[in-house]
Amino acid sequence: MMYAWIFRHLPGPLWVRILTAIALLAGALVLMVRYLFPWLSDLTTFTDTTIGLLLT
Image (tube, rainbow, N blue to C red; front, side):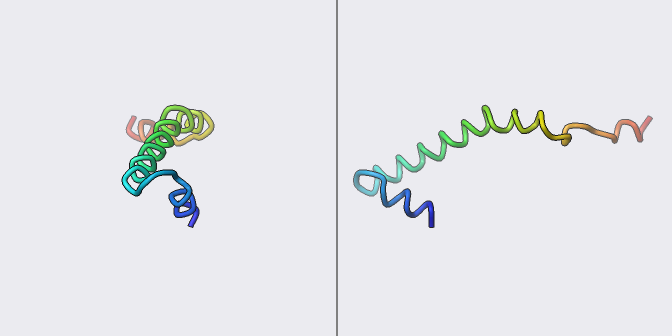
């Protein structure tokens, strides 16, 4: 529902709206991979492993 609202409010004909939507999605993905996910990985313990302790 939210995505449809955003798509309806993008300017231009259909093909321009599709390209703009793809660019917005790619930009959001780049921002998340570049800034959000590294920040979250510092706050979580998902990178701490205990398998090495069990094998030794």
